[in-house]
Image (cartoon, rainbow, N blue to C red; front, side, top):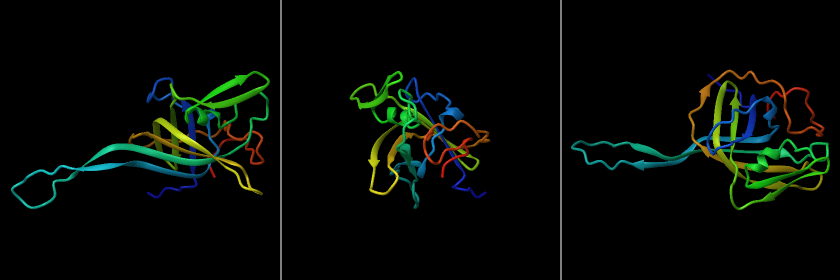
Length: 188
């Protein structure tokens, strides 16, 4: 069965305990562009068995993990003291979130107690769960262009599954953006 790559949904939520799925909901939607998913990365270990016959002895996968990269528009929430839609992503990139009610939200790098995220990524009817995700962020900003935050997350490997999508509302990533959406339908 073919999959339609343009037909995808990304949800992200902070894990209370590393690698334990917090079950992201529709309100945790991420509006992203240039999405790239590597559902299984790692190395192979040769078994090097001595056998009395010719032929390979097979390889074993090791150090399995997943990688997710994407960009989000660098836009605020539109309300002072309200976390922007990409705030949860910064928390997964070793940044502490400081909220001053009705004033500001700031992100500062931290050295210890890094938080991790769980991503739910649906590509057509296939769901990828990326638990224990931690990442990096860079700012992409050029003249006459949309400023983006560019994220790369590495996660624990989990086998994908065919799961009904059922999420059609609650996107939070770009409240002030000119791409405002009334219902979340996925990524561009």
